[in-house]
Image (cartoon, rainbow over all chains, first blue to last red; front, side, top):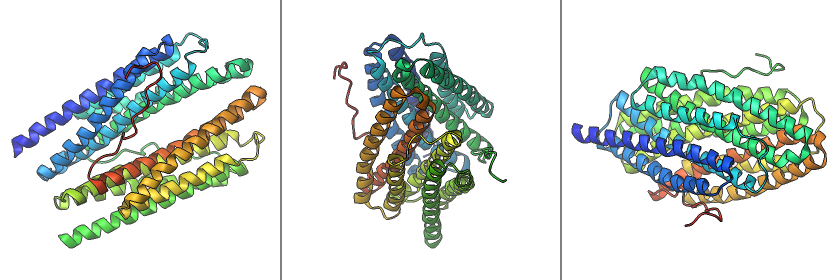
Length: 227
Length: 227
């Protein structure tokens, strides 16, 4: 029984790592589609999305089997239920990579607004966050998970900067509006991928410390709201 | 033991219903903030977000207790693990209502671009989807869950329509750009709320039928991709 449980647990970890690698790859290919204005990298993302979806279902079933196989104790129970949630997070990240490809497809026949520098940089940051968030889960590495959370702020700042720059483009030259809106949405998609990696990081801290730090950052009330 | 399990299950359902009611309320208040350009409805959303976050943590703990209390069988096991995921979905919807308030706050001091008709309509559709998705989960109502999935398409169409209209505004009059981009993002936030309700609907169909229909809608490949 114990051995079966461990075998299933190992399989589960392998599947999460495979899923994360596919998502990372998809982000890179989606940005390639955007930069090169070629269709092929986008098609590759669609293929990967199919595999990501299959893995999501498989992870769910593996987790249900693990829960049914034996009643896991506190730490293992949390690990398995978190793995179910993390499968969902990865699947959503895969969807967002497809969303980037959709934007790339809309922009494919228009001249590039400008050489892309910040968006690929943001994509690389997001990719590293995906990788490290899953790694921190597999190895129960609290410090690495913390680091992922910290990097999310950098991604948010970069996205705000991109947003303001694109707004300036549009205002100065309305002929850029369609293209700028497309890129602005790509920035949002990447920011949301980073958010999902952050959710994974929060789950890791939860299972390591045994208490949640979700919502630990209380939102600042707007100036007009009383405390 | 059986009685304890049933009691916990009842508490769990009550919490999900309370959470859904808070989210529904938050969407309405966020749109009110956008329409009236007053701060107070936005502050009310922030208060509700706090309660939504607390409920998310409580639901998670209730589910872990239910899993630890006894090894639930197939149907119950699925119900409890789905409830954990649905808590996450509701929490994200609450975040999106706060995002709408953030957009309302940015737009508060600018003249309204136009009387808002479609966005409040979209908000109402999203609210109903939140309500019905949770109702379908509590009552394991496959048909209602299906209906939620169908309505998601209507929301998507309405959002595309709003998007195109706002793009036209911007191109015709660049002085509207900032406001139009703000509203365009509100449309996205609402669309994503509807997506989360759809995720809940998919989970319901999963527990009722015992098999997943997630990813049942295979994405159409782009024209340039081979099959």
